Length: 498
Ligand SMILES: Nc1nc2c(ncn2[C@@H]2O[C@H](COP(=O)(O)OP(=O)(O)O)[C@@H](O)[C@H]2O)c(=O)[nH]1
Ligand SMILES: [Mg+2]
Image (cartoon, rainbow, N blue to C red):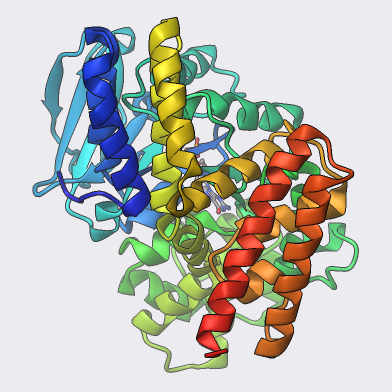
Protein backbone atom coordinates (compact mmCIF):
# COMPACT_ATOMS: atom_id res chain seq x y z
CA UNK A 1 0.00 0.00 0.00
CA UNK A 2 1.55 3.28 -1.05
CA UNK A 3 -0.70 5.78 0.62
CA UNK A 4 -3.02 5.98 3.57
CA UNK A 5 -6.55 7.31 3.88
CA UNK A 6 -7.08 10.50 1.89
CA UNK A 7 -8.62 12.41 4.82
CA UNK A 8 -11.29 12.60 7.52
CA UNK A 9 -14.22 11.65 5.28
CA UNK A 10 -12.51 8.52 4.03
CA UNK A 11 -11.63 7.70 7.62
CA UNK A 12 -15.25 8.16 8.72
CA UNK A 13 -16.47 5.90 5.92
CA UNK A 14 -13.81 3.28 6.75
CA UNK A 15 -15.05 3.27 10.36
CA UNK A 16 -18.65 2.98 9.19
CA UNK A 17 -17.78 0.00 6.99
CA UNK A 18 -15.91 -1.65 9.87
CA UNK A 19 -18.94 -1.21 12.14
CA UNK A 20 -21.32 -2.64 9.54
CA UNK A 21 -19.15 -5.56 8.54
CA UNK A 22 -20.24 -7.97 11.29
CA UNK A 23 -23.88 -7.26 10.42
CA UNK A 24 -23.73 -8.46 6.80
CA UNK A 25 -23.34 -11.84 5.10
CA UNK A 26 -19.95 -13.24 4.00
CA UNK A 27 -20.37 -12.21 0.34
CA UNK A 28 -21.15 -8.61 1.17
CA UNK A 29 -18.40 -8.60 3.82
CA UNK A 30 -15.81 -9.65 1.24
CA UNK A 31 -16.95 -6.74 -0.95
CA UNK A 32 -16.69 -4.40 2.06
CA UNK A 33 -13.07 -5.49 2.61
CA UNK A 34 -12.32 -4.55 -0.97
CA UNK A 35 -14.01 -1.16 -0.44
CA UNK A 36 -11.81 -0.49 2.60
CA UNK A 37 -8.72 -1.53 0.69
CA UNK A 38 -9.65 0.85 -2.13
CA UNK A 39 -10.26 3.68 0.32
CA UNK A 40 -6.62 3.71 1.30
CA UNK A 41 -5.30 3.43 -2.27
CA UNK A 42 -4.58 6.50 -4.43
CA UNK A 43 -7.49 8.04 -6.34
CA UNK A 44 -8.39 5.90 -9.36
CA UNK A 45 -8.73 8.02 -12.48
CA UNK A 46 -9.91 6.46 -15.74
CA UNK A 47 -8.97 8.09 -19.03
CA UNK A 48 -11.98 7.68 -21.28
CA UNK A 49 -12.91 8.69 -24.80
CA UNK A 50 -13.16 7.46 -28.35
CA UNK A 51 -10.47 5.28 -29.80
CA UNK A 52 -7.58 7.30 -31.30
CA UNK A 53 -8.53 10.41 -29.39
CA UNK A 54 -5.01 10.34 -27.94
CA UNK A 55 -5.76 8.82 -24.53
CA UNK A 56 -2.63 6.71 -24.26
CA UNK A 57 -0.45 9.57 -25.48
CA UNK A 58 -1.93 11.79 -22.78
CA UNK A 59 -1.46 9.07 -20.16
CA UNK A 60 2.25 8.96 -21.06
CA UNK A 61 2.49 12.74 -20.79
CA UNK A 62 0.82 12.71 -17.38
CA UNK A 63 2.97 9.90 -16.03
CA UNK A 64 6.04 11.56 -17.58
CA UNK A 65 7.15 8.41 -19.30
CA UNK A 66 6.51 6.81 -22.66
CA UNK A 67 5.12 3.50 -21.45
CA UNK A 68 1.56 3.07 -22.79
CA UNK A 69 1.52 1.83 -26.39
CA UNK A 70 -0.12 4.22 -28.84
CA UNK A 71 -1.65 3.77 -32.26
CA UNK A 72 -2.33 0.18 -33.27
CA UNK A 73 -1.39 -3.11 -31.59
CA UNK A 74 -3.17 -5.51 -29.27
CA UNK A 75 -2.26 -3.81 -26.03
CA UNK A 76 -3.92 -0.59 -27.09
CA UNK A 77 -7.12 -2.65 -26.98
CA UNK A 78 -6.72 -3.61 -23.33
CA UNK A 79 -7.51 -1.74 -20.15
CA UNK A 80 -4.26 -0.91 -18.32
CA UNK A 81 -3.97 0.32 -14.76
CA UNK A 82 -0.86 2.39 -14.05
CA UNK A 83 -0.06 2.45 -10.39
CA UNK A 84 2.86 3.20 -8.13
CA UNK A 85 5.29 0.38 -7.42
CA UNK A 86 8.75 0.10 -5.89
CA UNK A 87 10.05 -1.66 -9.03
CA UNK A 88 8.83 -1.31 -12.63
CA UNK A 89 6.71 -4.35 -13.50
CA UNK A 90 3.88 -5.24 -15.88
CA UNK A 91 1.44 -7.99 -15.02
CA UNK A 92 -1.11 -9.55 -17.30
CA UNK A 93 -4.27 -10.43 -15.41
CA UNK A 94 -6.19 -13.33 -16.90
CA UNK A 95 -9.98 -13.57 -17.00
CA UNK A 96 -9.57 -16.46 -14.54
CA UNK A 97 -7.69 -14.20 -12.12
CA UNK A 98 -4.27 -15.66 -12.94
CA UNK A 99 -1.35 -13.24 -13.26
CA UNK A 100 1.90 -13.39 -15.12
CA UNK A 101 4.73 -10.93 -15.62
CA UNK A 102 5.21 -9.31 -19.01
CA UNK A 103 8.66 -7.93 -19.90
CA UNK A 104 8.91 -4.32 -21.11
CA UNK A 105 9.92 -3.97 -24.75
CA UNK A 106 13.31 -2.63 -25.86
CA UNK A 107 12.08 0.98 -25.52
CA UNK A 108 10.84 0.43 -21.98
CA UNK A 109 7.23 0.41 -23.13
CA UNK A 110 4.44 -2.07 -22.68
CA UNK A 111 4.84 -4.37 -25.70
CA UNK A 112 2.35 -3.65 -28.45
CA UNK A 113 1.43 -7.31 -28.74
CA UNK A 114 0.95 -10.15 -26.27
CA UNK A 115 1.81 -13.68 -27.18
CA UNK A 116 -1.51 -14.96 -25.87
CA UNK A 117 -5.16 -15.06 -26.85
CA UNK A 118 -6.65 -11.68 -25.88
CA UNK A 119 -9.91 -13.35 -24.91
CA UNK A 120 -8.13 -14.91 -21.94
CA UNK A 121 -6.88 -11.50 -20.74
CA UNK A 122 -8.85 -9.32 -18.33
CA UNK A 123 -6.51 -6.33 -18.19
CA UNK A 124 -2.92 -5.21 -17.56
CA UNK A 125 -1.47 -3.87 -14.32
CA UNK A 126 1.59 -1.66 -14.72
CA UNK A 127 3.55 -0.85 -11.57
CA UNK A 128 5.89 2.11 -12.12
CA UNK A 129 8.22 4.10 -9.88
CA UNK A 130 7.01 7.46 -11.24
CA UNK A 131 6.13 9.83 -8.41
CA UNK A 132 2.83 11.10 -9.90
CA UNK A 133 1.39 7.65 -9.37
CA UNK A 134 1.78 7.89 -5.61
CA UNK A 135 -1.30 10.09 -5.63
CA UNK A 136 -3.19 8.94 -8.72
CA UNK A 137 -3.75 5.55 -10.26
CA UNK A 138 -4.31 6.14 -13.97
CA UNK A 139 -6.48 3.70 -15.91
CA UNK A 140 -5.98 3.76 -19.69
CA UNK A 141 -8.98 2.41 -21.58
CA UNK A 142 -9.28 1.29 -25.21
CA UNK A 143 -12.15 3.62 -25.77
CA UNK A 144 -15.84 3.28 -26.20
CA UNK A 145 -17.52 4.24 -29.42
CA UNK A 146 -14.85 2.52 -31.43
CA UNK A 147 -15.34 0.43 -34.53
CA UNK A 148 -13.59 -2.45 -32.87
CA UNK A 149 -16.48 -4.09 -31.07
CA UNK A 150 -14.17 -6.38 -29.08
CA UNK A 151 -12.48 -3.42 -27.40
CA UNK A 152 -15.83 -1.92 -26.63
CA UNK A 153 -16.95 -5.19 -25.10
CA UNK A 154 -13.73 -5.40 -23.11
CA UNK A 155 -14.14 -1.89 -21.75
CA UNK A 156 -17.77 -2.48 -20.94
CA UNK A 157 -16.94 -5.74 -19.27
CA UNK A 158 -14.46 -4.02 -17.01
CA UNK A 159 -17.08 -1.46 -16.17
CA UNK A 160 -19.67 -4.11 -15.42
CA UNK A 161 -17.33 -6.06 -13.27
CA UNK A 162 -16.50 -2.85 -11.52
CA UNK A 163 -20.05 -1.99 -10.68
CA UNK A 164 -20.62 -5.50 -9.39
CA UNK A 165 -17.63 -6.04 -7.18
CA UNK A 166 -16.20 -2.53 -6.93
CA UNK A 167 -12.73 -3.92 -7.45
CA UNK A 168 -11.03 -2.20 -10.33
CA UNK A 169 -13.43 0.69 -10.64
CA UNK A 170 -12.70 4.27 -11.42
CA UNK A 171 -13.52 6.96 -8.89
CA UNK A 172 -12.90 9.82 -11.28
CA UNK A 173 -12.76 10.25 -15.03
CA UNK A 174 -10.65 12.26 -17.44
CA UNK A 175 -12.66 12.50 -20.67
CA UNK A 176 -10.67 12.97 -23.84
CA UNK A 177 -12.53 14.58 -26.73
CA UNK A 178 -11.27 15.80 -30.06
CA UNK A 179 -12.61 18.52 -32.29
CA UNK A 180 -16.20 17.38 -32.69
CA UNK A 181 -18.29 15.95 -29.90
CA UNK A 182 -20.36 13.13 -31.32
CA UNK A 183 -23.39 11.33 -30.01
CA UNK A 184 -21.30 8.36 -28.93
CA UNK A 185 -19.01 10.67 -26.97
CA UNK A 186 -22.03 11.55 -24.93
CA UNK A 187 -22.74 7.83 -24.55
CA UNK A 188 -19.24 7.49 -23.17
CA UNK A 189 -20.08 9.98 -20.48
CA UNK A 190 -23.07 7.89 -19.56
CA UNK A 191 -21.29 4.55 -19.79
CA UNK A 192 -18.85 5.65 -17.16
CA UNK A 193 -21.60 5.84 -14.62
CA UNK A 194 -21.07 2.10 -14.34
CA UNK A 195 -17.37 2.59 -13.70
CA UNK A 196 -18.03 4.68 -10.66
CA UNK A 197 -20.08 1.96 -8.97
CA UNK A 198 -23.39 3.34 -10.12
CA UNK A 199 -22.52 6.82 -8.97
CA UNK A 200 -22.92 9.39 -11.70
CA UNK A 201 -19.77 11.01 -12.97
CA UNK A 202 -20.18 14.74 -12.96
CA UNK A 203 -18.19 17.90 -12.44
CA UNK A 204 -17.29 16.60 -8.99
CA UNK A 205 -15.21 13.76 -10.32
CA UNK A 206 -14.81 14.39 -14.04
CA UNK A 207 -12.49 16.58 -16.08
CA UNK A 208 -12.75 16.96 -19.84
CA UNK A 209 -10.07 17.92 -22.35
CA UNK A 210 -10.17 18.90 -26.01
CA UNK A 211 -7.15 16.97 -27.21
CA UNK A 212 -5.17 17.34 -30.44
CA UNK A 213 -5.78 21.08 -30.29
CA UNK A 214 -2.78 21.42 -32.62
CA UNK A 215 -4.79 19.87 -35.46
CA UNK A 216 -7.52 22.50 -35.37
CA UNK A 217 -7.56 24.68 -38.49
CA UNK A 218 -7.91 28.16 -36.97
CA UNK A 219 -9.26 29.65 -40.20
CA UNK A 220 -12.30 27.36 -39.82
CA UNK A 221 -13.22 28.87 -36.46
CA UNK A 222 -14.92 32.25 -36.39
CA UNK A 223 -13.31 34.69 -34.01
CA UNK A 224 -10.01 32.83 -33.77
CA UNK A 225 -8.03 35.38 -35.82
CA UNK A 226 -5.94 32.58 -37.23
CA UNK A 227 -4.62 31.57 -33.81
CA UNK A 228 -4.70 27.87 -32.92
CA UNK A 229 -5.02 28.35 -29.18
CA UNK A 230 -7.77 30.93 -29.56
CA UNK A 231 -9.58 28.53 -31.92
CA UNK A 232 -9.14 25.70 -29.42
CA UNK A 233 -10.54 27.82 -26.60
CA UNK A 234 -13.60 28.74 -28.66
CA UNK A 235 -14.27 25.12 -29.64
CA UNK A 236 -13.67 23.91 -26.08
CA UNK A 237 -16.21 26.44 -24.84
CA UNK A 238 -18.78 25.15 -27.32
CA UNK A 239 -18.14 21.57 -26.28
CA UNK A 240 -18.52 22.50 -22.64
CA UNK A 241 -21.89 24.06 -23.42
CA UNK A 242 -22.99 20.90 -25.25
CA UNK A 243 -21.86 18.63 -22.42
CA UNK A 244 -22.98 20.59 -19.41
CA UNK A 245 -23.95 20.08 -16.69
CA UNK A 246 -22.04 16.82 -16.79
CA UNK A 247 -18.68 18.46 -17.17
CA UNK A 248 -17.75 21.80 -15.67
CA UNK A 249 -15.60 22.85 -18.61
CA UNK A 250 -13.33 21.53 -21.35
CA UNK A 251 -9.58 22.29 -21.37
CA UNK A 252 -7.69 22.38 -24.67
CA UNK A 253 -4.47 20.36 -24.76
CA UNK A 254 -1.92 19.01 -27.26
CA UNK A 255 -1.19 15.57 -25.88
CA UNK A 256 1.45 14.66 -28.44
CA UNK A 257 3.54 17.78 -27.80
CA UNK A 258 3.13 17.21 -24.08
CA UNK A 259 4.23 13.60 -24.36
CA UNK A 260 7.31 14.41 -26.44
CA UNK A 261 8.36 17.28 -24.21
CA UNK A 262 7.66 15.53 -20.92
CA UNK A 263 8.95 12.01 -21.45
CA UNK A 264 12.42 12.57 -22.89
CA UNK A 265 11.26 11.65 -26.40
CA UNK A 266 12.37 15.07 -27.62
CA UNK A 267 16.17 14.88 -27.97
CA UNK A 268 19.07 17.20 -28.76
CA UNK A 269 19.25 15.59 -32.21
CA UNK A 270 15.67 16.78 -32.76
CA UNK A 271 16.70 20.25 -31.65
CA UNK A 272 19.58 20.22 -34.16
CA UNK A 273 17.24 19.22 -36.97
CA UNK A 274 14.87 22.04 -36.03
CA UNK A 275 17.77 24.50 -36.07
CA UNK A 276 18.59 23.39 -39.63
CA UNK A 277 14.95 23.78 -40.67
CA UNK A 278 14.90 27.27 -39.15
CA UNK A 279 17.43 28.34 -41.77
CA UNK A 280 15.16 27.57 -44.72
CA UNK A 281 13.72 30.53 -46.61
CA UNK A 282 10.20 31.50 -45.56
CA UNK A 283 8.58 30.48 -48.87
CA UNK A 284 9.91 26.90 -48.70
CA UNK A 285 8.96 26.67 -45.05
CA UNK A 286 5.39 27.80 -45.68
CA UNK A 287 5.10 25.23 -48.47
CA UNK A 288 6.42 22.43 -46.29
CA UNK A 289 3.93 23.27 -43.55
CA UNK A 290 0.99 22.82 -45.91
CA UNK A 291 0.76 19.08 -45.31
CA UNK A 292 2.57 16.17 -43.71
CA UNK A 293 3.31 14.86 -47.20
CA UNK A 294 4.93 18.07 -48.37
CA UNK A 295 6.82 18.34 -45.13
CA UNK A 296 8.52 15.00 -45.58
CA UNK A 297 8.96 15.01 -49.39
CA UNK A 298 9.91 18.63 -50.17
CA UNK A 299 13.49 19.15 -51.32
CA UNK A 300 15.46 20.24 -48.23
CA UNK A 301 18.86 19.58 -46.60
CA UNK A 302 17.35 17.83 -43.55
CA UNK A 303 16.98 14.11 -44.36
CA UNK A 304 13.43 12.90 -44.99
CA UNK A 305 13.70 10.25 -42.26
CA UNK A 306 14.62 12.93 -39.73
CA UNK A 307 11.64 14.99 -40.81
CA UNK A 308 9.33 11.99 -40.41
CA UNK A 309 10.69 11.51 -36.92
CA UNK A 310 10.01 15.16 -36.04
CA UNK A 311 6.52 14.84 -37.43
CA UNK A 312 5.82 11.75 -35.34
CA UNK A 313 6.96 13.56 -32.20
CA UNK A 314 5.60 17.06 -32.74
CA UNK A 315 3.26 17.02 -35.74
CA UNK A 316 3.20 20.03 -38.05
CA UNK A 317 2.05 22.58 -35.52
CA UNK A 318 4.71 21.55 -33.02
CA UNK A 319 7.44 21.59 -35.66
CA UNK A 320 6.40 25.07 -36.77
CA UNK A 321 6.22 26.23 -33.16
CA UNK A 322 9.72 24.94 -32.49
CA UNK A 323 11.19 26.47 -35.66
CA UNK A 324 9.64 29.84 -34.75
CA UNK A 325 11.18 29.55 -31.28
CA UNK A 326 14.61 28.93 -32.84
CA UNK A 327 14.17 31.89 -35.21
CA UNK A 328 13.19 34.12 -32.31
CA UNK A 329 16.22 33.07 -30.25
CA UNK A 330 19.02 31.71 -32.40
CA UNK A 331 21.11 30.36 -29.54
CA UNK A 332 18.20 28.56 -27.85
CA UNK A 333 19.31 25.35 -26.11
CA UNK A 334 17.65 21.99 -26.66
CA UNK A 335 16.42 22.15 -23.06
CA UNK A 336 14.86 25.57 -23.52
CA UNK A 337 13.24 24.38 -26.72
CA UNK A 338 11.77 21.37 -24.95
CA UNK A 339 10.47 23.68 -22.26
CA UNK A 340 8.89 25.97 -24.88
CA UNK A 341 7.11 22.98 -26.44
CA UNK A 342 5.87 21.85 -23.05
CA UNK A 343 4.51 25.34 -22.40
CA UNK A 344 2.84 25.31 -25.81
CA UNK A 345 1.16 21.95 -25.12
CA UNK A 346 -1.23 23.15 -22.42
CA UNK A 347 -0.27 20.22 -20.15
CA UNK A 348 0.33 22.53 -17.20
CA UNK A 349 -3.32 23.60 -17.32
CA UNK A 350 -4.50 20.00 -17.28
CA UNK A 351 -2.17 19.16 -14.39
CA UNK A 352 -3.37 22.18 -12.43
CA UNK A 353 -6.96 21.11 -12.95
CA UNK A 354 -6.19 17.54 -11.95
CA UNK A 355 -4.67 18.91 -8.77
CA UNK A 356 -7.53 21.27 -8.05
CA UNK A 357 -10.34 18.88 -8.84
CA UNK A 358 -8.98 15.45 -8.08
CA UNK A 359 -6.15 15.64 -5.63
CA UNK A 360 -7.65 18.34 -3.48
CA UNK A 361 -10.95 16.51 -3.42
CA UNK A 362 -9.69 12.96 -3.31
CA UNK A 363 -11.02 12.50 0.22
CA UNK A 364 -14.59 13.44 -0.66
CA UNK A 365 -14.56 11.65 -4.01
CA UNK A 366 -13.21 8.43 -2.51
CA UNK A 367 -15.58 8.56 0.46
CA UNK A 368 -18.58 9.13 -1.82
CA UNK A 369 -17.48 6.33 -4.17
CA UNK A 370 -17.10 3.97 -1.20
CA UNK A 371 -20.58 4.82 0.09
CA UNK A 372 -21.98 4.14 -3.39
CA UNK A 373 -20.11 0.82 -3.46
CA UNK A 374 -21.38 -0.44 -0.13
CA UNK A 375 -24.90 0.65 -1.07
CA UNK A 376 -24.60 -1.39 -4.28
CA UNK A 377 -23.10 -4.36 -2.43
CA UNK A 378 -25.95 -4.45 0.09
CA UNK A 379 -28.71 -3.86 -2.45
CA UNK A 380 -29.53 -7.54 -2.90
CA UNK A 381 -30.65 -8.18 0.69
CA UNK A 382 -33.39 -6.06 2.23
CA UNK A 383 -32.01 -6.37 5.78
CA UNK A 384 -28.51 -5.41 4.75
CA UNK A 385 -29.84 -2.62 2.58
CA UNK A 386 -31.73 -1.14 5.51
CA UNK A 387 -28.76 -1.30 7.87
CA UNK A 388 -26.43 0.27 5.32
CA UNK A 389 -28.89 3.04 4.46
CA UNK A 390 -29.46 3.84 8.13
CA UNK A 391 -25.75 4.00 8.83
CA UNK A 392 -25.14 6.27 5.84
CA UNK A 393 -28.01 8.57 6.81
CA UNK A 394 -26.52 8.87 10.27
CA UNK A 395 -23.10 9.66 8.88
CA UNK A 396 -24.44 12.28 6.48
CA UNK A 397 -26.33 13.91 9.32
CA UNK A 398 -23.10 14.75 11.13
CA UNK A 399 -21.77 18.28 10.57
CA UNK A 400 -18.32 17.09 9.48
CA UNK A 401 -19.94 15.12 6.65
CA UNK A 402 -21.26 18.29 5.06
CA UNK A 403 -18.73 18.11 2.22
CA UNK A 404 -20.13 14.70 1.25
CA UNK A 405 -23.65 16.06 1.11
CA UNK A 406 -22.50 18.92 -1.06
CA UNK A 407 -20.81 16.48 -3.45
CA UNK A 408 -24.00 14.44 -3.49
CA UNK A 409 -26.10 17.51 -4.27
CA UNK A 410 -23.75 18.45 -7.09
CA UNK A 411 -23.93 14.98 -8.52
CA UNK A 412 -27.74 15.01 -8.45
CA UNK A 413 -27.79 18.26 -10.38
CA UNK A 414 -25.13 17.22 -12.85
CA UNK A 415 -27.07 14.06 -13.62
CA UNK A 416 -30.32 16.02 -13.94
CA UNK A 417 -31.79 13.90 -11.16
CA UNK A 418 -32.90 17.16 -9.54
CA UNK A 419 -33.94 19.88 -11.93
CA UNK A 420 -33.17 23.46 -11.05
CA UNK A 421 -33.52 26.69 -12.97
CA UNK A 422 -30.29 27.08 -14.91
CA UNK A 423 -28.91 30.01 -12.91
CA UNK A 424 -29.45 28.14 -9.63
CA UNK A 425 -27.89 24.96 -11.01
CA UNK A 426 -24.87 27.01 -12.08
CA UNK A 427 -24.65 28.49 -8.61
CA UNK A 428 -24.69 25.06 -6.95
CA UNK A 429 -22.03 23.80 -9.35
CA UNK A 430 -19.92 26.85 -8.55
CA UNK A 431 -20.25 26.57 -4.78
CA UNK A 432 -19.50 22.85 -4.83
CA UNK A 433 -17.05 23.03 -7.67
CA UNK A 434 -14.07 24.42 -5.84
CA UNK A 435 -12.41 24.63 -2.45
CA UNK A 436 -11.43 28.24 -3.00
CA UNK A 437 -13.89 30.62 -1.36
CA UNK A 438 -13.71 33.58 -3.80
CA UNK A 439 -14.20 31.12 -6.69
CA UNK A 440 -17.06 29.43 -4.85
CA UNK A 441 -18.75 32.79 -4.50
CA UNK A 442 -17.93 33.78 -8.08
CA UNK A 443 -16.15 36.86 -6.68
CA UNK A 444 -12.47 36.31 -7.36
CA UNK A 445 -10.45 39.45 -6.65
CA UNK A 446 -13.18 41.24 -4.66
CA UNK A 447 -12.56 42.71 -1.20
CA UNK A 448 -13.26 40.53 1.88
CA UNK A 449 -16.18 42.60 3.20
CA UNK A 450 -18.05 42.03 -0.06
CA UNK A 451 -17.43 38.29 0.18
CA UNK A 452 -18.76 38.15 3.75
CA UNK A 453 -21.87 40.09 2.86
CA UNK A 454 -22.56 38.03 -0.24
CA UNK A 455 -22.09 34.68 1.55
CA UNK A 456 -24.56 35.77 4.22
CA UNK A 457 -27.07 37.02 1.69
CA UNK A 458 -26.95 33.79 -0.33
CA UNK A 459 -27.17 31.67 2.83
CA UNK A 460 -30.38 33.48 3.68
CA UNK A 461 -31.74 33.18 0.16
CA UNK A 462 -31.17 29.43 -0.04
CA UNK A 463 -32.73 28.91 3.36
CA UNK A 464 -35.94 30.56 2.24
CA UNK A 465 -35.82 28.70 -1.08
CA UNK A 466 -35.59 25.47 0.94
CA UNK A 467 -38.67 26.37 2.96
CA UNK A 468 -40.84 28.03 0.33
CA UNK A 469 -41.15 27.57 -3.37
CA UNK A 470 -38.96 24.49 -3.83
CA UNK A 471 -39.95 20.91 -4.68
CA UNK A 472 -38.95 18.35 -2.03
CA UNK A 473 -35.89 17.32 -4.05
CA UNK A 474 -34.90 20.94 -4.63
CA UNK A 475 -35.45 21.60 -0.97
CA UNK A 476 -32.97 18.91 0.06
CA UNK A 477 -30.35 20.42 -2.23
CA UNK A 478 -31.21 23.92 -1.02
CA UNK A 479 -30.59 22.97 2.62
CA UNK A 480 -27.15 21.70 1.68
CA UNK A 481 -26.34 24.85 -0.29
CA UNK A 482 -27.57 27.06 2.53
CA UNK A 483 -25.29 25.24 4.91
CA UNK A 484 -22.35 25.54 2.49
CA UNK A 485 -22.81 29.33 2.36
CA UNK A 486 -23.20 29.46 6.11
CA UNK A 487 -19.92 27.60 6.61
CA UNK A 488 -18.20 29.90 4.09
CA UNK A 489 -19.56 32.92 5.94
CA UNK A 490 -18.32 31.54 9.27
CA UNK A 491 -14.89 30.90 7.82
CA UNK A 492 -14.66 34.39 6.29
CA UNK A 493 -15.72 35.99 9.53
CA UNK A 494 -13.18 33.92 11.46
CA UNK A 495 -10.47 34.98 9.02
CA UNK A 496 -11.29 38.68 9.34
CA UNK A 497 -11.33 38.33 13.12
CA UNK A 498 -14.91 39.66 13.35
N1 LIG B 1 -1.48 15.87 -33.85
C1 LIG B 1 -1.68 15.20 -32.72
N2 LIG B 1 -1.69 13.85 -32.73
C2 LIG B 1 -1.90 13.21 -31.56
C3 LIG B 1 -2.10 13.91 -30.34
N3 LIG B 1 -2.27 13.00 -29.36
C4 LIG B 1 -2.17 11.78 -29.93
N4 LIG B 1 -1.95 11.90 -31.26
C5 LIG B 1 -1.79 10.79 -32.23
O1 LIG B 1 -3.03 10.12 -32.35
C6 LIG B 1 -2.82 8.72 -32.55
C7 LIG B 1 -3.62 7.93 -31.54
O2 LIG B 1 -3.11 8.18 -30.25
P1 LIG B 1 -3.37 7.19 -29.03
O3 LIG B 1 -2.78 7.82 -27.82
O4 LIG B 1 -2.93 5.80 -29.36
O5 LIG B 1 -4.98 7.23 -28.95
P2 LIG B 1 -5.96 6.31 -28.08
O6 LIG B 1 -6.48 5.25 -29.00
O7 LIG B 1 -7.06 7.22 -27.64
O8 LIG B 1 -5.18 5.77 -26.92
C8 LIG B 1 -1.32 8.51 -32.43
O9 LIG B 1 -0.79 8.43 -33.72
C9 LIG B 1 -0.82 9.75 -31.73
O10 LIG B 1 0.50 10.09 -32.08
C10 LIG B 1 -2.07 15.34 -30.38
O11 LIG B 1 -2.24 16.04 -29.37
N5 LIG B 1 -1.87 15.92 -31.60
MG1 LIG C 1 -4.81 3.83 -26.36
